[in-house]
Length: 130
Image (cartoon, one colour):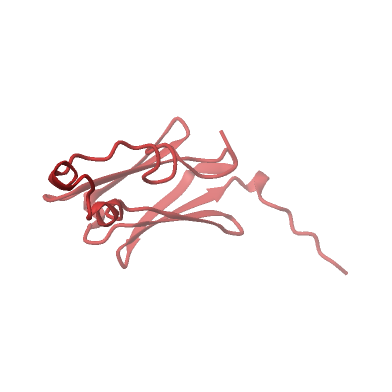
């Protein structure tokens, strides 16, 4: 385990080290003018550390809460979405200080918001200054 949320699927940063999908443009012209447009289709995510844990924001435009499945197993938080027309999947390694019983998820304004609270014993203790 680590102390930061890390991408577990896709390996390196988005697009790096992946084989390019077949396109007729590459065969005809030797390059694909739409490659950059297509690489932006994948949903990315944002992670921010809060006072009590972490917040992960995953864009899920057009998905309803019942079309999104969030699971936790063996230190990995997985998010899968499926509609009639498209699917997506994201996985994150969860830091050891997260209380896995207190992970919550909600969809709000096209964003999946995951709240990962740290265990109370790992949160900083406030000391009064007099």
